[in-house]
Length: 421
Image (cartoon, rainbow, N blue to C red; front, top):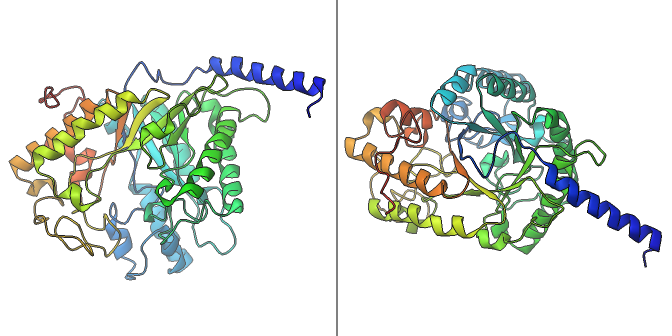
């Protein structure tokens, strides 16, 4: 039983926390101005489908993610390749171009190994100076940065983009993994807390695999609460930051999170949801009109969830999984039936690759899917498209969309404003 004095202290602290929670002044007017942004995918966390050449040039088909990139190569060879990639894949010119395209945010994925590498882990470090440069470039060009922890120890989802491709995620089942992730989050939050006008959001973990069961969701929920403390109170005191915590829905319906972190002691929390239409046979079998209708129909879920600011942090105008290595290096596509267990729905010819090979009708379709999603996601608090550039998958590239015309130079310049009825 609590003593009276301890009870009073606890109540006083709770009251102080609830009052302090009202004081956040984030670096962007979330909730009143729409987030319009793009992901810098494949830069500080490797993705085989975004930069297939980086993997193919190793000459080793067993290299399928960033873990094996370091594991199966000489350290000096791997480091040189990574440094060249970090120097060239994203530069200040990209930030200039992103700002010129009327966007206001970039989401920047980075792995825990940028801060610490455990014994026996083959990850190669050197990403942090580029993160710091990115924040500086964003400040120079009027952009906000979402620092997104895309990979955690043990892998939070088993995807190659978590840094380690695994048959089942190991992050949630090992308290040491979770403790290491919390320690990294404290370091991120403390470094960037004073730069909240630029690094306005920290996303503590990308896409934890809530579809793998209650154990994952239990660990994720506790981690979101821990991250709130680490991000919103990064000064080891009662002093509060102005940095927003962006949590992911863990692949649950938004309704699952109704009321989550909504009580008075919480503020400055936003929800990240990712919406794709190509990772099942049922989705890739849809007609063009059905894809557009599916995109428009997302509005009901987005508008019925009102607990937190809601940002669609990943999506694409592409509606097939034809992009090379999208499902993993050496893995085929559902759309053309080359993915194990899938059926043939159509040829991937002309569906991906260079935008110069796309037909005018396909470019029109990409423009329609882009606009249908922008219109829908702006019924919530905005969007961040995946991704800015890709070596050989222009259907996924914002940069290529601007070049070839299926993405407008001004994201508010819509040709099909009535597409969702």
